[in-house]
Length: 296
Image 1 (cartoon, rainbow, N blue to C red):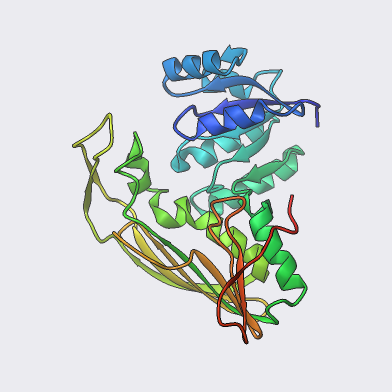
Image 2: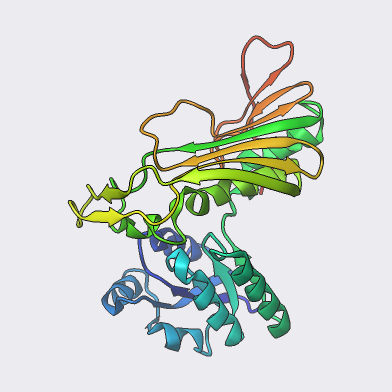
């Protein structure tokens, strides 16, 4: 790949700011261009972050100076934008989820392989010091043989704070595709590959009322499940429980827990790079904090 890697950002919405900021910190990356369905928003981002070009998405995808497309569009557009980028011979990094269907994801990977380009996808938080310290502890046998795990994300959705929360309740949204990738990615890193899954879901509330600005009072028709529970069987024989919900007002449970034959490990929030890690061996009376010892 080129150095610096020249990046074109598609989608200048709420999450884009942290990407513009972080990519500008490294000599190995340079944001060359950005685009958005709202050209004014693309132009505003280009001016704010000193990006040379604010373009239409079609122009950006075929721009000769762009090596990689950073796809920050809404989930329902991830597949179409990524496929168009791959067709144009560009590498792609998608925000999660990679796509909203297995078939679309399979098509994207196969097309990238045929074109000789690479595809990546968020999240990368599993590479942070918190989860990697947990991985080191598990590998060293600190909790014995992993036998079970739990993953909990419970809140009442994003309409109270996000400026444009509609897509969270439309096809491609919901807690499993929005927040689930953080939890499932962390579990696969810690527990290994998955053999099979089972689950059940529902949309508890048929509508959501936005209380954030600038759309305060607008009503969203819910089109996707908003409370999902699932069971995982890992290839190792370990089992896991997953709860992902936009329907819960309050909860008091650890985000990620790994149970072993000799103790348990509180992994912390997988949406962070370095949340608190705690361990409790079978003979301990309290949880003990663990300093970060390993990570990227």
